[in-house]
Figure (cartoon, rainbow, N blue to C red):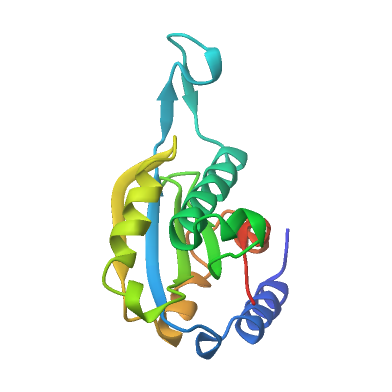
Amino acid sequence: MRTYQDQFAYRQAFHDLVRIEQFADPFAVTLTLRQGLNGSGGMQGQFKRIERYDAEQNFRHFTNLLNRQVYGHAAERYGKRVQVVPVLEGGTSTRYHYHAIIDCPRPELHFEFPAMIRSCWLRTPWGYDQIDIQSSCDEGWTNYISKFRSKVEYDMSFDWTNCHLD
């Protein structure tokens, strides 16, 4: 178990690393996950409850879809990727959900970017239709996504495997 001082130091390190001014057009995004799936993975008629690994894998699939939609073949050929900082919350008494900063890389996409995010999220197996996308992302959002409550293990809530910063 981490001490409060450890968590506070981790939160400060997060704020030192993630600064809103490093994004071109950041969106504040909340993406909710299904609690379970029926008959998933060849388990006909069985219910599979979501686990942390499923959530992380689903978010990776989402970002791959979004990168392909934004950059086309350049996403695969040249590794072009949208900047994203995901934080996973929930799991014990609340539904798993991601809070994220997702950067719209080109000004001409600003108005269609929320629809792109929604479409890509709903194409994932665990994507649930409770989605909130705000274009006015600021330091208040980084404070909110790094809050202490709603996180089972504070430092493990930051999904660094799916994070991409330039």
